[in-house]
Length: 454
Ligand code: MN
Ligand code: MN
Image 1 (cartoon, helix red, strand yellow):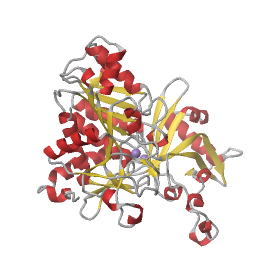
Image 2: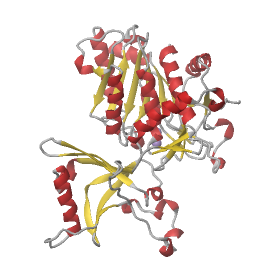
Image 3: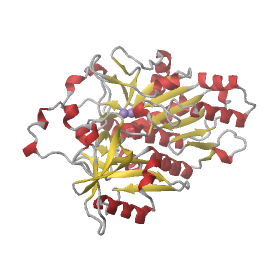
Image 4: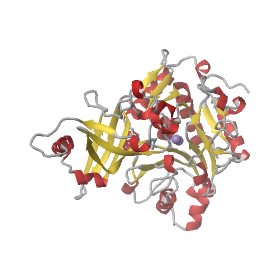
């Protein structure tokens, strides 16, 4: 089957480039889930969304958002139909692979101060050395004060980084398996090298602590209640001489989060209630209070029902059962340098539109959501009506590997769910790549889904 190249579909590429400027800005400023939630709130409030707490009751047309522990957000536009008829839901995750700072991280070695880390999600460890890194996150002091940390992203900020052995002395290292060339315990970040005067020992570490005290009023013990992440430093950039692609950190899955969010913000007075939910912790199994497995989503729908009519549990179950969802996550695009891992009829390509995966999983579909063909047929009908370019794929050859998403978790609530998303190159690397054409076309697809699926 031939899918049209989106660049050839549109005479005028202006809207594609314009939409991607917004995305580039979002991605630059959303380097962890907390920052992504902050950016989402900013964009939503500009479109008239308000915190659900401000509403005693809800009526058709109301635009609300609910934040869960600053790391997970759900947005809704209340429809004219009752919630028991179901919702049209877009879901994506806003956490990305990175290096988390340990609870007791700071040490000195040979006149360097370093931070110990524990990587988060699936990373090829060797990709994270000798690149400029930033520190983002929060330190929460015993009195409850939350100190925001963001070092490395402003043009004049210093960066930090992880060293690697020089090639001249790497004979032994290069004999190791790629998984062990850089050991997880060696992903320690260099943060300083000036000794503090008049100190007996650990003078460099003492100097760093002095800087932290001066700038943030925090002590070494405050790392115990901190959530700090080491992420690639710098701005999202255009990629390619024709600027057709975007190079940045965390397309997985903020590219689906942004396009889902922006589509939701476009909706006015829908018949079915529209929802966009952005979750945390997908990269480590969707566990915990802010992950997709949390009761947060069900509880929030229950709250919405209670603010539109008399609540009972059966109504909540009905609302979930009658819902449709695009669970969006990036899809592995065919890379011209590594075509061998794909079965090309069932693979996705750049500029060929939003990707639908009937199933993900690994080796025999293990652990996946397997979307119903009745739902897929509905989607085909809506997308074709709107002349939206889309493709279908699976993750690599049958026995090649695999991966999971949040789709099965919401499908377990007995709603109609399919995996959708945007094709990405270099998935989980510090610099991932997407096609601007796909970003734009996914946004169009999400709008069509929200307004037309019933
Ligand atoms: Mn993902
Ligand atoms: Mn991922």
